[in-house]
Image (cartoon, rainbow, N blue to C red; front, side, top):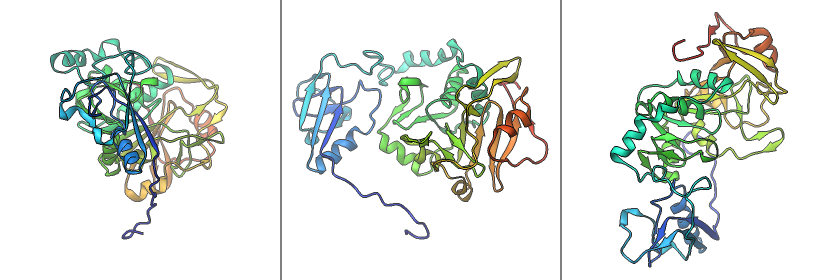
Length: 359
């Protein structure tokens, strides 16, 4: 108990070995990360292992002479490094050898020209993902500090890039990146032409301290109290990543995901959504299998909580999750209420869910 709050205390544990990666090492073992797509927790891990009496081993692309690395490019000082392994053909990531735009080394006019052309390929998401992205994007506010989670939420980031609006918001990723064009899929966590790259622990200081205005996150299950589960699905425990740190401290949380899962089929055309086949797995459940996000805690701290699906939009109220909007073409009773294991709050007129920027 600290003050009036009951908190968890996580005890430290010793780290025996930290196996890390950088770009270059000098003769003193100083490590630069100038060609890496993210700093992540490299320094923190090196510090933890060193202070535990463990070993710090760093893989780099090549060695350079003493004094060749500018001090501001050194991310891990040689005092913490026990061994360096040189791999000359080290790739920047699994997908390609090296791209200076990913490591933040391309700047100035070249980067600005790429930013101007971000929208040239258009918004590639389609079907339910596009419906969710368009509606969720309406929750954006000018100059907001925002975070995008993995999966369907990154459709919002793609839409922002396609519209050429990356400069209207402060986009962040928990890996430590600010701005630029956020990448998705297996490259999630990277950004092209980022405006800033810091260490991941410092980024989480921003999140834990309440510095996020809006977080766009996915969800596995949701119940009528606004509890969300992303950590135990189908009886299998999965890692929630930074979900809890981000979700519980953002001023507004916009959960983005399909209404059902496994086998569901949609048809999205002419501004309407039609369900061709219902899913085998319900995501709106009576009680979530595990609470990764607490609706009760959200209400206590004054968070705004929205859930955007391809069929309907819900918002958390003191009475529970309220059905706020329904997409055109969706039957409220058959496609929404009958496909939920809890009864949402339904009061007054249910609005028509916007399907595109101009709706």
